[in-house]
Image (tube, rainbow, N blue to C red):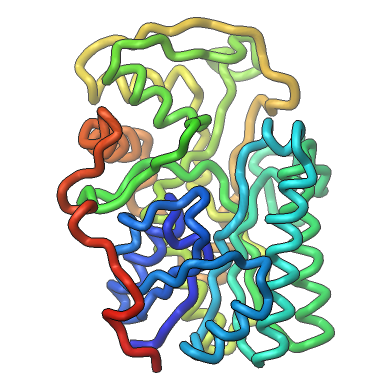
Length: 344
């Protein structure tokens, strides 16, 4: 099996990518400092524990495994935390990316697939959002992703690295087989918060009911995390076959309002959610929906299970198993370590 590095592979999105890679006969090698990730989610390949800001360590890993590609998911993701502590976000999201780029240039490794975000656009002028829409991020988190994208493009031009910047919209749901899922502490994403509210019979906070949308609540483009993972494997294959470097939206192209999300979770739960309506949060766009045409044309990518019911159902199954903060037996029993594998 050809090794592929996944930085942040012990996290929510990274672990799903590792599973998708293994299904296509790659060996996913997780590089993670476990500050946000979970060793128990590293189930499909070896775990190498370290920090991507340590360039010497990265170079050693690249020499040891000689990966055929690097998928860079490691980074911090909280918009609010980035505002209160921007230094942390520039250190991890920008500094970590520069460290990885330096290591890849030094060892002659390519291609690179970067985990970017629709947050680079800020308040979009038009919806659906195309890749060539203006980038005016509203938070240090969004700016850190935008700066990293520009650095990758500059390194590519100077040093010959091939790359793809994948701009995620709202990744949601969980592995349909129940083998991995979202485990953020604290949780800030709407789908797991709605599911948790249904499971524990606690209030769900609805921020903003006066948006210029059909039901007054904000609309987002939810893409199932397993579909997102598939897009990464397709991108690896595309770049390895000589495809040109690119920046692509990864979304469903469908807008779902917060009330529609609440209704979907209630339908899965078989009971209504208690909803507390709050004022809008500053900086939240009314609508954020991808134009996925370029990813479809470039990769042939088309989401298979990104309807809101499938997302809610798989998230419900995962969180029901996690209620009480215990990992499902299958996940607890399958921690992987690099000693189980032979580097090639």
